[in-house]
Structure formats: structure tokens, C-alpha cells
Length: 312
Image (tube, rainbow, N blue to C red; front, side, top):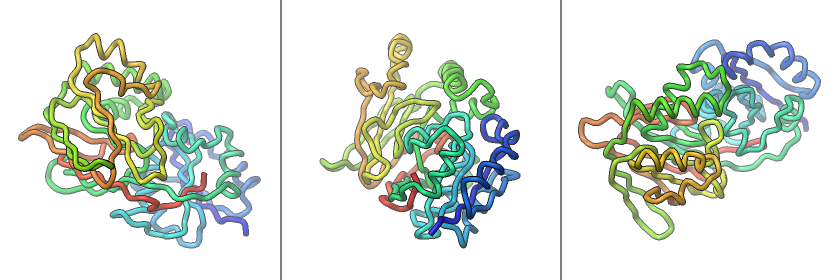
């Protein structure tokens, strides 16, 4: 039986360029997907609401970038559980960074990406159930992260990049935002606690950036989850502490080759179950989820194995 596919498209994705592809998307979807519905978001939060109300569909696909994917997933998975068991998540990458698309190997051609939703394999996928303090510090936020959670400078970089409009594309935008972030924000005292296959572990010190990866890429191609899988029940943790400037400059390329863990004092680990993260008293440490500024520490990051399906 042909799958029924709901396409949730974000006109603001790709620096607003997706809005100019309305007719193309409608035309190709009509040719490739016999049973589909195409809806467009109007404001932040729409994709989550539309995904949550997806009764009658077999696949719900984010048409946009990593932020659109984040919203759609938060309509399909809430508080560590699937809202609609049996409904698969899909992705058509029209965004700037395309980091989740790299991990899932989503075809770049629009017709091929759409055809995959209807005909490609469906498999289980992990996610990260995240509880944070809200950005205003007045309450609690609980979100589902599908790709990578970033702590510290990562979140500041996302804040700068998203404000820039990303008109220069993913890699250039995030590289420039990283330089600006390094000039404006320094390391902050943080304590991390987690479990791996050998038992309980912890790290405490001045954190520049922390990456907790379910997928493999973030920040326009930074390879922070090399060797990991979205279906292994584990998360890949990278801890970048305060480092000398010359070390950062000399080894910055390693973020894109998946070798940042070879730099002295950088730590990597495989996290099973959960990671607890705390900031020093009175310090604000921001957190981004899938390229979206989401809250601040303290935070709890739980891996939820096979919590959803993905058509990829």
C-alpha cells in the first residue's frame, strides 16, 4: 500500500529561499507522491502542532532545515514517548546547514528525497529527551532533540547564526558565527555527570563547548558524532575545555574531520542512559538543540532508544 505522506514545509528555511520554491515543491510532490498533503507553516511552533495532529498519515516529513526537523519531531515525540506510534518521521532538506540530512543521507534532489518518503525503508531511531531551565530562568522546558545538543559556546554560535539570516550558507555562516562567539564569550565552570559502559563518570572544569550527539553532524558540517549511530542507544559526548588560542586556531579544522578528540585536553565519551549538566552558581550557560536556542543549564539529557521511526 502506498504511504500517506504529510509534508510540513517551512517557507523561512534556507534563509527564506524555500518560500520561492512553493510551486516547484507542489508540482514535484504531485508527480512523486500519490497520496500526500502539503501544508506550510506561518510562525514558530506551527510544525510541532501540525505534526501532533497528523492522524491518518504514515509519514510526517519536515520540508526545510534542522530547525524544521526539530519542530516536527517535537510533535511526534513528547516526554520521551511517541505521540503516534507507527508514524514515521521524514526529511526533505531545503535548509541552510543540512546536518541531520547528512547523517540520514537524504538525497539532495527534490524528487529523490520525496520518493524516498513513499518507497524507502522505515527503521527505528533514537532521540534525546531534554529537560532544561527556560531561557528567562522562570520555569522548566522539556524538548526532544533529534540530532545534536550543544552546551556553552555552541549555543551562543547558534544565537548569532540565527540572527544573521544565514544568507551565506551553512558552513560560512557557522564559521563566522564561531569566530564572533569566541571573541565575545568565554568558557564557563560546568559539571557533567554521565554513565557509560564502564560505570559512572564525571567532568568538572571551564567548558568552552560541549556536544552531545545522536546524529553525526552539526554547525554546518562539524563532525562531532563520528562513528556513532542514530539507532545504537548511545550518545557521543565531546567536551572542549578552555584551550589556548593557538590550539583552537590550529585545530579548528578537526571539528569538520571528526578528529577533535585527538586534541590534548579534549575529552570524548559514549553516554548511555543520561547526562546531567550543571553550571556554577549564578552563571548562565545556554543550550541549543538541533540548532535552536532552547534553554539553559541545569539540564538532563536522556537517550530514548528506538523511540520513533524514520523513513530514511
